[in-house]
Amino acid sequence: MANLKIVISALNKASGDIKKVKSDIEGIGKAGKESKGGLQALGDGISGAWKVALGAAGAIAAVAGAIKMVGGAAQEGAAFQRMQDASASLADSMDADMKSILISLRGASLGMVSDFDLMQAASRAMMLGVSADADQLATLMEVAGIRGRAMGVSTSQAFSDIVTGIGRASPLILDNLGIVVNAEETYANYAKSIGKSADELSKAEQTQALLNGVLESSRGLLEQTGGLTLDNAGKWEQMAAAQKNYFDIVKADLADATSWWAEYWAAVFKRGVESQEALSKAQEYGI
Image 1 (cartoon, rainbow, N blue to C red):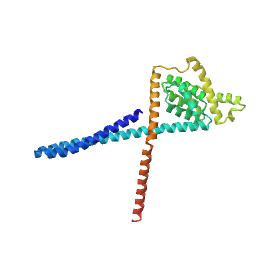
Image 2: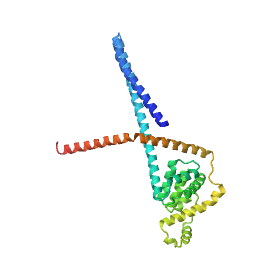
Image 3: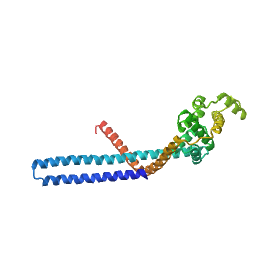
Image 4: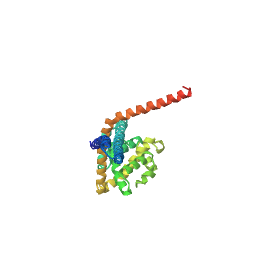
């Protein structure tokens, strides 16, 4: 694991610095004893002390930097694990499979969006009641990619806007991506197809009507453009997404390996708070 190797290397270097500091300290004493001139000995001792101080500061900084890097990477890995678990649970609650959704979205986005962003986007779509269907979400992702390019926004942002516009029944948000949907007409047509009036539609049915309207209005765009294609900018986006996916996995492994550290210090700080509270109560009672 690349990150872990970097951390180990940093710690090893710090360890070497610390050993050098110890050696320098011993050298100061030796230099002082062996020096014949009093002032010369004093000067050598002061110079050596400065070197030791600088060496110690460097060693401490190296250790602190390594610990900070490990902690930050582990927290990011834990966040990735949380997103995996939360999105999978949400999909399960809707009789859907997050793995299938993720595979479909990867294909629709041509690998230009990281797995973390895809899981986040799919979760948003499900929570807003837009869809938990892998094929429908993939089509929305492809539409988002095409319209996002035309509007100068990322595929992730465009997908989020489409999902928000449908989920909140906001044609204005959809209009920002060039998706023009007549809400009243869309509701009326859908209501007629299920034997209801537009006023009788539930929130979920209105959302479904808008989703159908967006997919229908985008069909011609997909046919005309041939779907989302990979351009030079997209190749760089692929690289960025692949890089993030790799490091998210590495950081997730690191989170598993270092979770005990967070648990240990959480317990230490908790005991510290309890001790302070006990001391405050004792002072109140004059103990």
